[in-house]
Length: 158
Image (cartoon, rainbow, N blue to C red; front, side):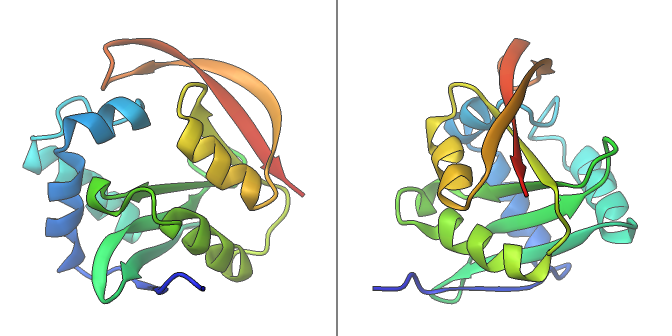
């Protein structure tokens, strides 16, 4: 049975939901590479103003059964084109991230396309691998949510 999701352009109204979703401590721990202070609304608004005005960015809200479940974005912030996504914790474990990424890959057809995930974020690694991404390298970076350097995988599609 297909997962009931659709992707649409992000609107200003979505930002309140994205902010609420990023406040969850467990979600931050899993994602690892998050804002220094997830509760800082001013920093959040500043970050999102840059994202919404950015070039080389494709950004979509993920809707599940009409509710904003998260977002997915491709960007070139670190050089190569990468995809990142966030799913609100209340939507975990339903196949939403995999379905959203599969749809998004029809929109963003640039290859190679890269992604990054903390090595212990098994759920995100599975989503990426189900959509055809292969581990192509490793890196380490400071993870604000964990307050320490964390090992991550770099994944590549195409």
